[in-house]
Every structure is written in structure tokens, then in C-alpha cells.
Image 1 (cartoon, rainbow, N blue to C red):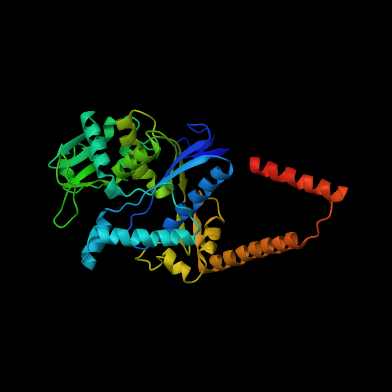
Image 2: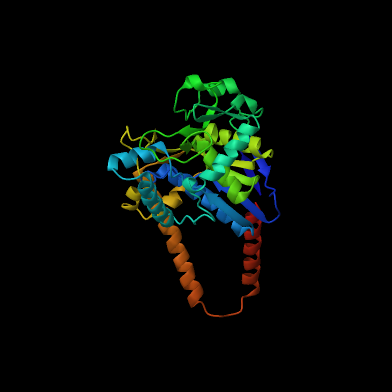
Length: 360
């Protein structure tokens, strides 16, 4: 079996760290609203990858997190006059309903960021002790240039990355030793949820969450890390820097990323009025149609969503379901007779072709 590895930019033969087993981490959604169809694509794509590994006989430990502490969650909570915890719990439950509708199997583990804070603090402390991180006025930053391999996933040098930086900085650029340094821990603001740490009452940065949750539930090294291509930089690049600096080992052997989803040939955006949630789609179509649509194109190719394409997918899926039902009916009602030599030869040829396709 070969996988396209974003790290090497080529297809590679899949060789697991442990024979017969696959350790796979997929970045999950930030839960402040119903998931949108952009969230749905990696869920469906990598659920399918997981199912194929299981079909091939692998024991798959599949971990996908929920980010349940974030600026957007806090903003939503303030707007509604409720706690951030209430918002996150509500939309985790709604997300799981949509995942079930799309026939996405529950992960082996769905860790919550808020339940893993102590481990994140320990990892940050390790990075500080090793000289990869420093504290300024309660904020802890990662020294990006200290990690020699920074940029190996996005295939850019540090100066190129400067212009693409997505900073989680809270207290001001002037505190950083270098503009490319990113936040590991940030002090609380008034009314925000917070946790005690050696540096301040506050909460973790976004990137450290996945590094810690992957380590806890899969170990210091994993086979596959996956997510949308928008996560290559900075999120996955920063995960590599954190995890490999802290653990002293290669983090993930294979990196898989799905391409973007557009709406009517335009980028999905609330400002363009073309934002679509999975829940909205479920009011028009069975979500199995959405799954079939998502799998109609190669996962690394951009996919365009439109009402016409969904109707076409609905018709295509119905043809397959009807054909399967018809075959099932014929099998259940067929007379039990011995195959002729000609039929036996045709059946053997079909089995041979099926086996060859599965190997390819």
C-alpha cells in the first residue's frame, strides 16, 4: 500500500511502526457551532482511510480531538450569556449527531483539550527546560529558530514563513524574541476560563493541544497524522517542532492532507453568504449523499460543492443502492443448483480480478 506523504511530497510504501497496527491522529473541529461541510471533508476522507486499513486487517488506533477551549467558543459563550463549557458540550453533541449521519465511525478516542491541560503544562515545561521555550509576563513562547528542522512539512524556509504566520499572541509582538515565535501558554483575560500553571493563570495555545493529546493516546511516535491542507502551516508545522523537540523523536512518519472544498466555485465564507453547515445539508439530502459526494473526487484535489452536483450524487448513489438491492434479491431467491463449468470459470475469473484490484 502506498500513501502520498506531504512531508516528502511523494508516494511512499506504508510501513507501520508496529507490525499489524496503525496509530493515526486526525485534527478535529473547534466546537463553537454546527460543523460546516469543510469540516466534513476530512472527517469522511480519513474515516474512509481508517476503514480501508481495517479492511486490510490492521488494528487501527484512531484518535481525533475536540478543541473545546478557544477564542471563538468564549466569544459565543459571552454572546449567549452562558459558560464556555456549556457551548462546547452542546456542539460536541451536535457534531457527533452529524458524524453519525455521515456514517463516520467514532474515533477510538475523542480527547477533549480541557481534560488534558496538565499534560500540556508538562510538555511546555519540558520545552522550557530544554531551551526551546521562554516566558515573558506570563506568556510562554516557542523559539522557532531553535528547532533546526522548522519548515520541513510546509517546505518553506523561516523567512518565507514570516509572511504566512498565524500568531496566537495575546500580549503583543514586542515581547517575542523573534516574530516567528509562537504561543504555548497565554494569560487569562477577564471572564475567560483559566487553569493554574507555573507561568500564569491562563490556557494553552492551540498547537500544543494536539501534540500532547497525540502523545498521551498514541505515544511519542505515530504512523499517520492527517487533516485539512489549511493545517499544514502553521498548526502541523508547529506540532512537529513541539513534539520532536520535547520527545527527541520523529513525530509522525506519514502526513496526509485533504484539499479545500469550494462552494459554487468560490471559497466558503460567511461574508459571501455561501457558508453551509452539515445540519443544513441534512434538511435537503440524506447525509449518505454528502458522504458519496465527498468521495467522488481524489482527496488531494479541490472539490466544488453545488446543489446540482449534490443532485447528481444523489442519483448516482441511488443507482448503486438499487443495483445492490436487486442483486441481494436475486441471491436470496436463486435456486440452489450446481454451477456449470462455464459459470464456475467465470466466477473464478471474477474472484481473481477482485483480488488483483484489492492489491492495487
